[in-house]
View 1 (spheres, rainbow, N blue to C red):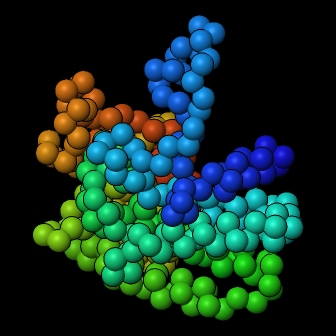
View 2 (view 1 turned 180 degrees about the horizontal axis):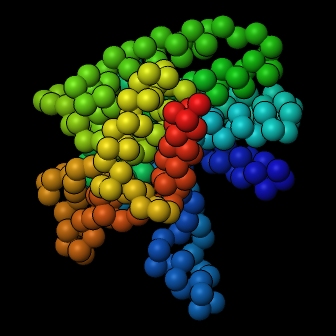
Length: 276
């Protein structure tokens, strides 16, 4: 808990001028390598933009609030929340500046899959955003005991989210939506975390898991999981990844243990319910 608290303090002590949490804290990959040779002459610093045309990443503020509530819930360190409430409010408010028509909105490369464009409204960042509202509400409740405003705000947003992202023909949540079309790829992260955070109801969660079971051979191995199905098109992947033969980095090819873990948890629960 000491390490978690120390990191939480470091994060909120390094907000940008507009209250964004840094994407990473580093010098650069090149200077990190030089450290192994004892050449430590470049100070680490907070970096708020990713390396593709200086687009912002949009999940870190949400993930911070989710982690902070988990920390408070497990440790009962309510004093930490009280002492840092102004900074915590700033973290939440930055998310609100990223909204357009109720959802997190931006240009390309703003998710953890930062090799894929996913412009405008993408699923995973909005899943994290919804859970961050719930977490923020719980944090305020731990301080002031009663907080109905953000509970109602969350429920209102959740209904709009489901209506916006739910694919009524394929029975899962669409990957992203821009001004021209709906991109109905099945993204494992957004769909699994929507179940994990209880954003989808039991019927929709079952539909999502049924789709995953039907397409298990395209997404899961015994111990790892792929990011999406089917493959993203050539134009949707950043050009430099094609140049270095890494176009499959976040594109239904490499396997990810953490995605498998959350998927397997839900599938096991689904199988258990089916056996009852």
